[in-house]
Length: 236
Image 1 (spheres, rainbow, N blue to C red):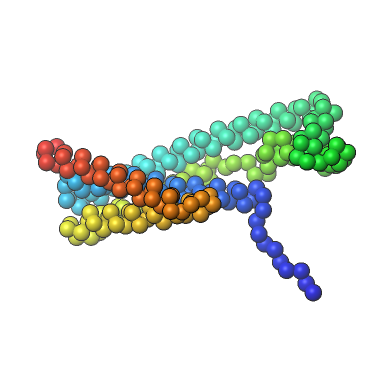
Image 2 (image 1 turned 180 degrees about the horizontal axis):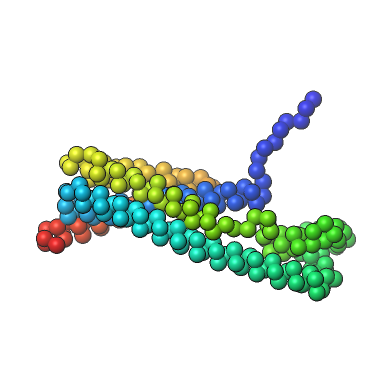
C-alpha cells in the first residue's frame, strides 16, 4: 500500500503565510474604514458626484501610498536588523567557534534535549552549516528568507486599494438618494467579512472581531457624516 500524501505546510512557511494573509486583511480593513469615513463625510456636505469621486480617489491614493511607504520603511528596518544580527553571528563563529558551539548546545538543551544529544546535534548542525544553525536556533531567522520590504510595500498598497475601492464605488455609482444607504450597508458587510477573516486567521472568536469592526466602522462614518453635515449647513 502506498503512503498517503501529506502537503500540509509546517513551521516558518505556514507562519509566514498567515502573517502575510493577516497583513492583507488588515490593510483592506484600513482601506475600507478610512475611505468610507472620508466619502461619507463629504456626502454629508454635498451630493455632487464629482466632489465625492475626487475625495474618494484622493483618499485611496494617499492612503495606499502612505501604507506602502510605511510598510517599506518598517520592513527595511527589520531586514537591516536581521542582516546586522547575521553579520555579528558570522564574526563570532569565526573568532570564537568553541564558545558558539557551547552556546548552541545549551540552546538545544534548553529545548528539551539531553546534554549528550544536544552536544551531538550541535556538532552536526555546525559541521553542516554553522551560521544557518545559529540563525535559526538562536536568532529565529532563516538566512534564505529574510523579510522583503518591496513585497511588503506592494502587499499593503494592493490590499488598501482593494478595500478602499468598495466605499468609493458605493458612494458614486448609485443614484443620489441611495448613495448613503448603499455605502453604509456595503461597508458594514465588508467590515464584518474582514473581521471574521482576521479572527479565523488568528484562531480567535469571530463574533467579537466582527462586532468590533462593524461598530468601529459605523462610528467612523457617523462622526465624519455629522461633521460633513455641519460644515455643509454652515456653507463651508
